[in-house]
Image 1 (cartoon, rainbow, N blue to C red):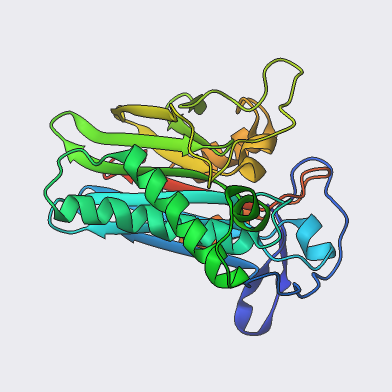
Image 2 (cartoon, one colour):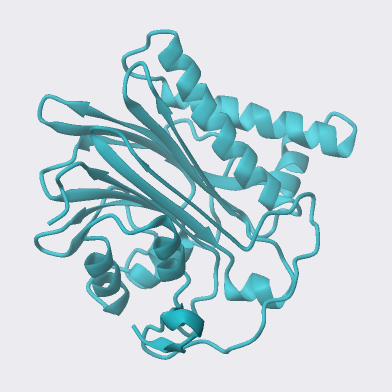
Length: 299
């Protein structure tokens, strides 16, 4: 990591993090409104007695250049009565005309649907019902935007998005995590001792074959992909869009080394956003990452 020369008062300015060969340099253009707008970058971070959360979402170079808004979103809240962290990460499909809205609405709908179930006393939220609620929210949002009742294809054309939603709570043997997903956003357990990224869902690529289509909300698969387990000591939960997952790959390269080093302990939310905005040629998608450390997991 290189720093710019000292500025007034001895404060240094952060320079862009570069991995291998950087992408082109240019000043980002303002996004055109496409059903909704969102800032170029946003981040969040807080701790409970049991866990520390950080999240960040940044607009990719392709969207900065072509004046498109960021199409990723993340949302996380604490259910105070149970100590459960509820979270969601979404990646609006590029072919959907208002995918920025789709991603943000899907995240909010999923998080608050889980929160409502916990309020009702459910020990294990029905995550399939959460997906259906998020899909219904997208349908209602499309109806409001179109000012008429849309069919499923019209909701897709407007608001299609991937979604990973889940919960994390302290259990007798560690942090218990439950996840569900639609689409190709991913989740990993980062093993701090070995600097290994252990995928919790099937990876996007299968050999040299990359899927050309992605199942996305508002369609809910008959059997959505799920993962449940307990974070082992020294592991960090990561949930991210393919803008992070694609350059990460199997985690053995330079991007994996960069994040393994900087996520050994919870960074500041602003530093996570800065780190996530690294420059590497050919990787120009939006990037979103949510990380959850059990307290005491950092080395």
